[in-house]
Length: 190
Image 1 (cartoon, rainbow, N blue to C red):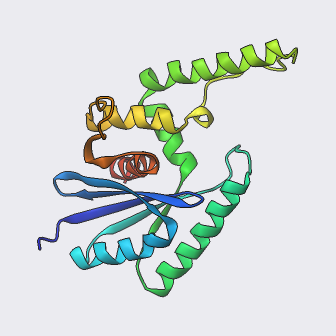
Image 2 (cartoon, one colour):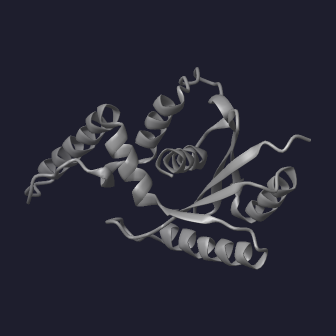
């Protein structure tokens, strides 16, 4: 089997992890798997190609709500780091906020209208509830969500939107879009 894997990117969630595998020819595939399958996935990829870069999106504070889901994600990241270190598999942690900021800065024509819609909707809801708007909300990377990430990655990789009822190219969905954004950030900034 040809050893063409160059980059593996992981976006870990509370119970599921998204992954993207890039080769010298581009995106090989996007996947989503249960967290307990991640180590086996990495070991299979290691057998395919011993020389690859493993990226993991790290959760670091940047103005986000701490929910049970975030806490469970952080716990899984700690377990993953420990197991990879024990197996001597090198990895690079990249904070999610850096990827979101990169998307915000690189794709403003796509991002700003989406963020403004979110701000306008939030203001409308607050006004309807009689809550005074304490300050003007300014668009920033903090508002970049999974939907905006997907739009930016479609533009970055020229991935057309799938027809209704069909899968996206490369089987990208859910967490794997964020994994693709992580890999794209790494490739363009390293």
